Every structure is written in C-alpha cells, then in structure tokens.
Length: 435
Image (cartoon, rainbow, N blue to C red; front, side, top):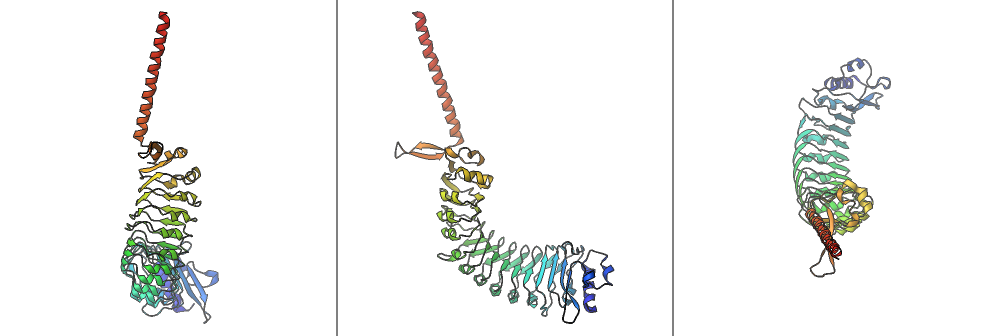
C-alpha cells in the first residue's frame, strides 16, 4: 500500500473506530495477509501494490464505531474502494452524507444502515458513483426529496431508501433504472401517484412502497413487471386497481401481495384468483365490499389470507377449505353470514390462526359444535321454520339469549310434567284407599 492511501486510511480509522489500540497496527501494512486489519479487505493492483477495496464498520467482528463518529469525507480518497458498509455508526453527532462531485467509478456497494444521526438530503451529485450496483440507505434520518439524478445510476440492481423521512414524489426518471431488481422506498412520507414509469423496471422482483402517502390508482403499467415476486403497497391512500383483463393477472411470478390499509371501497377483484403462485395475500382495512370471490379458492399455494375489517358480505366460499397449505386466515370484522363451511380437519389445523369474529351472521353447524367455543362471537346454528314453507328449515345463528330462553322453557316444561304426574298418581292412590 502506498503512503498516500495509508494516510487516508489512518485518518478514517482515527475518526471512526472505537478501538483505541488500532494505532498499534500502524507500523504494519494494513493489507498484509499476515497482519490484516478487521473490517478491511485489500486486493492487489496492476502496480504491484495492495489497495483497500472494502471497509466494514459496526458489525462483529469488524470495528465498532465511536459514539461521536461522523461520515468521513476522506473515504473517497481511497481510489480503489469498491464497497462501504457502515451499520449503527452515526448515533449522536449529526452528520450528512458526503459524496464526491467528480466521478468515483470504483465504488459498487454503498450501505449505510441504522444511523439515526445521519441527516440531510441525498446529495444530487450521487450520479458521480457511476458504477454503483447496491445502494442501501435505510433506517437513517435522511430528509428531502429523492434526487432525479439517481436515475443516472444505470448499473443499480438494489435500491433501498426505506425508513427515512424522505418527502415529495417518486421521480418519474426512476423508470430509467432498467437493471433494478429490488426497490424499497417504504416507511417514508412520499406523496402523489405511483409513476407510470415504474412499469419500465422489467427486471424488478421486489417492489415495496408501503407506509407512505401515495394516492391515485395503481398504474396499468405494473402489468409489465412479469418477474415481480414481492409487491407491498400497504398503508397508503391508493384507491384503485389496474383494469382487467390484464393488470395484476400478468404478474404470474407474484408470491406476496400486501395491499392492506388503502381506501379502495370496491369489490374484491376476482382476477386475483388467477395469481397461482401467490402465497400471502393481505387486503385488510380497505373498505372492500361484496362477496369473497370464488376464484380465491383456486389459490392452491396460499399460506396466509387477511381480509379483516372490510365490508364483505355473503357466505364464506366452501372451497377455501380445500387450500391445504393455508395456516393463517382472518375474515374478522366483516358482514359475512351463513354456516361456517370448514370441516374438523381445517378447523383443527388452523386453530387460533383462524379469526371469524365480528361477523354476527356466521354460525357453526352441530357437527362443528366441538370447535365453536374456540372462535369468539361465532355460535351454533339453529333451525327455524321458513315463512314460505312449513317443511323447510332456515339455519340462523343461535344467540346466547336464545339458548338461555330455551333452557328456561325446557326446565319449566319438565317441572310441569312432574307436577301433573304427581297429581295423577295422588288421585289414583286416593281412589284405591276409598275402595
């Protein structure tokens, strides 16, 4: 390692490392394989010197950051640096993200996570990191808008800006990140619609925009994301789906769809039942109305279905009982009615992971009576004569007050029978005696 690079490294260690003994290594070559420093990786260059290519702080066994550490501006004087990882380093002394104004073509990974004192905007000259493939800036306290210049990072594969305080709209120019596989902008304060250009990210496998304040309908262009496996749009203000016949039905790779807590106020889209690889579907707290589509019974790989706190009505589709992989089903706080169509094996398998509470019209038939005490608010069905026919019966929930009333009537009848029987016996006995 040449002296210029060594001095830059020593300056970074002096400002960052909690280890007060690092200077004891200063007489050694930091890149010497026999005396390599923790948190440091080096590679030989064409000039027959070793050069620093990776710095890792904050994760064991790498160096721990001192509490007063700030982002080291000297870091970009290491000309061969390819990877930077700082975890839980900037905790008390406020610091901003320093980036070079001129091209820094060697850097491929920049990961700054869980740094509560890292504040300020993402610098607009982030485009200087032209070879960047992985950019993780999650769980910090970054503010301001996402710079449009981020679209110049054409090699970017992974972009995670989650858990910050970012504001403004999602830049339309992000559609130019054609190599992007993973995009996470969740838990910020982003507003406005999801840009149509999101459909240009055809390599995308994960898209997480949850917990923002996004509005409008999900753009029709999402139908182009045919490699998408994970889609999370929960906790926004979205109010519409892409229109059939395509839309979500083109997402045949989709395994996880989280859309809960959006003001949809529409019927559940039956076309979701065509997503055959779907494993988890969350559509709770969104004002959905009408019946549960029968097409949902075709989701044979489904392991979890959350439809709670909507305005769903009608009967539960019996075919849900045939979903052999499901382990979590929440239909609570709706307006569902009729007989619960689940057999004993299904009820036993899900147990407490099945929530039917808050549906006053639901009831268990007598064959499922052994399970009904496990489900709050769902009683046993009773048969009542139909107004249209004296021979047909209608199953209705048996209220606890009705049970008490029936029990009272039963006991009253039994007492009356006993009294009449006793009086008859007494009369016979009296006649015999008189004879």
